Image: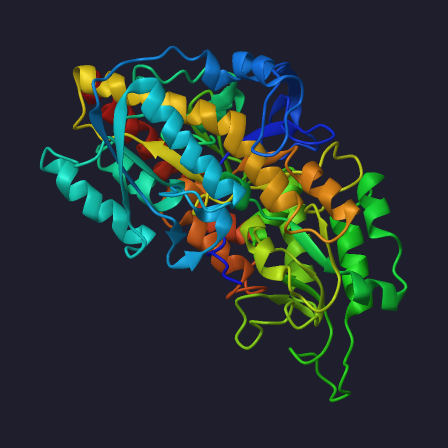
Length: 512
């Protein structure tokens, strides 16, 4: 499977998923720095009855009357062209959960739900959707290509649906796009925009990186853990699912079980990719976020480093020690590409969109959340990576009535996505197609009850993210965390301050 460079953004929201989708509640929580648990949990029940592509709870009449999208007022834009730029792959990677547009019905539920979304939009707003689906250009180059038209005065598009970390970040920094809070018609206070999630992503008064169901990619962006059930059974390990349900799935327990798996299978005196590994890990951020921590966080619009807490230092030290042990291997290590595919590792932490690639494994696997810091941490937390997580992007070339139209239509797409795309991808792509056992399906549900992003990986803030990445992989064990932070603290804090000032100036100019 394909794995992105390790990194992240800062928000957290909770989906309360009931017996079967459609989902009928949204729980939202906000984390501050390196707390042991999420705070400010607040259930905001969506008591509406929703229909999916395959199931209806209650009467369809009730559902149509109570979904968010059905409650939106119709508008007549006289058949206006509504041009959308997006992609159905990421840097050439093809996956069902990564699609943003369907040009025909195929019988695949996610594809057909996206197709029906566009029919709804055209009917509800009397617009003609015209897609440019660019699967050739890398995400890194998209912003450069798009910015040329925008800076020349004509973007060529009413809406761009692309990633946080490359496209949105670069376009925002060049003052090429609106913060979504400045777009009339976008109702960021509505539940389908996850307002408490997005409240932690503001830079000053500006919100550029909004997680929403404008795209199914959100569900593919989350890191989780997998384990080799056959190997766990052969080793006689304790019930790992039971550890999760009892709140005892912690970093210490992960380390303990990983060590039990390491074995010099061929007896040559060294542990390599032909032997049995304990943990084959991809994202250090997934461990940090799983432990209830953030590197950088937005607090009331101000960007704050969270690197100097005692818990963060202890966490980094524990991770570095564990990652250096024989048999605990970073997935970027040369020659280890197919370790988990071959069944040579007990644990692995891929992204959710990779699950489809594991359906044909010849051994049984299970799915787990990332481990807690310790048992006092109230909830498991999952990291959504910003190279997959996708946002609505609106060019500054739009003004007046045209901008208002784009805001209203975009808002409708997000509302429909919340009502129908969300349950379609969750239940039919993740829950049914990618899991082999009932416990894993339940844990998929559990994982998506607490998802957060890490702002430093969407924004980068100078060389901070790359320094942290190097610390955990290519320079593992060569530097301690206190000296690392001392070496980057001044430049990080200067970058946070200059970023706030830059985005305040951009917002002021747009408001003129």
